[in-house]
Each structure stands twice: as C-alpha cells, then as structure tokens.
Image (cartoon, rainbow, N blue to C red; front, side, top):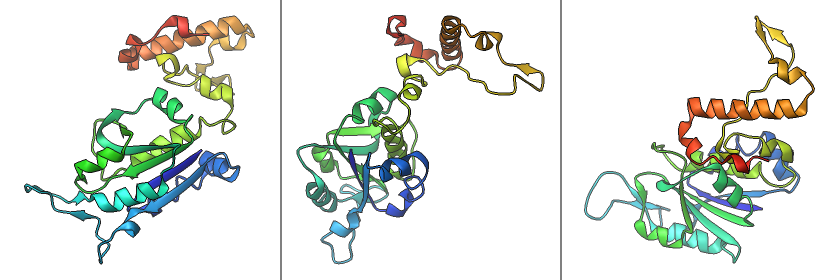
Length: 228
C-alpha cells in the first residue's frame, strides 16, 4: 500500500510514523508513507495557501489551487482521495478494513477555518474520527493511518486482529497474565481449565456483558450468527 498525506505541518508525523509497528511496516516494505507540504505547490509569491472567506466571517480558508495541484500530481487510477473533516463520515473499524484493501490513499489534512468547498469535488471520501474539533486534520490522519497499517498482511498476527474490539460489534474480552493472584484479585478459573470451548464461551459472554455496560449502542448491530 502507498499512502500520500497532504499537510502544512509535515514534521508532526515524524514521531508516530517512525516508531513501533508503523516503522517496522515501512522498513519491511508493507507500506510506503509520504508526507507532502502542499504549500510547495502554491503559485503565490509568498507561498500563501489560505485567504479570507467570501461573505465575511472569522478565520482563514484553505485555497483550491495548491491542494488541487498537489492531488493531481500524486493521483493515479488506483488512488482514493480522502478529506479529513469534522463533517465527514464517522470513522469505524469496518471502514479501516475497507481502506486497508486499497492500493493508494491520498489524505488531505485541513487546517485553519476549513476548506474551500470546491476542494470536495476532488475527494472520494470525507472522514471524521469523532464529534469534536481539533486544530487540524493531522492527528485524525495519524489515527486513521495507524488503524489501517496494522491491518495490512504481515504487519501484525492475523489472529490478534480478528479478536479485537469492534469486530462483530462487540468490545474485546478481558485478558490476564501472570501472576494468578495479585493484590487479592484472581484470574477467572475458567481460563486455567484448559477447556477451549468453555474459554471461548466465557470470552464471548464477557464481550457481550462489557459491551452492554459500556457501549450498548453497538449491540444494535450485533448478530450472534456472525461469531465463528
């Protein structure tokens, strides 16, 4: 997979994309990630990329020309262009799976007051990571890229990704490790039984219990027939 990211602050991505699993995925050639400062595409003598909004109002609006030119330079037949925006489709795990199957993602990170509305015409998808406002699209982009890269073949153990929260619309089951007793708290006996079916049933019941307590909204989509 190839991911091209448009941002006015490319150095923000240095830490998250040069550590841990994403670093390893890049080094092993599982993913190519490039950060592009779209200010470099501005035709303005001072490299300005924003201006005041027509009709008045506060803040500055990102202009069409630098973003259009940058996207057109990067785009191919395999590209999917994504805009990070609070008004976009809410990001969920299923969308992460869908995007992990794409060959090339171009992600536009906004800043300031927002995008010129015409920039939406070159986007295939608009995504929001939640109903709150951040200073720009860089952090939401990092969140999305992290969730996608870890799903690529060979990046993490396949079984690990199949048993995570939000698969089948259930939160993950509780897990334990040594010691068996800590500060009077014991590991559930069923996990020490060696009976794989009982362990599987226990974990599913815990997923349902936990989801009902914390995220009952997810249960509206849960179908027990989807559990293998």
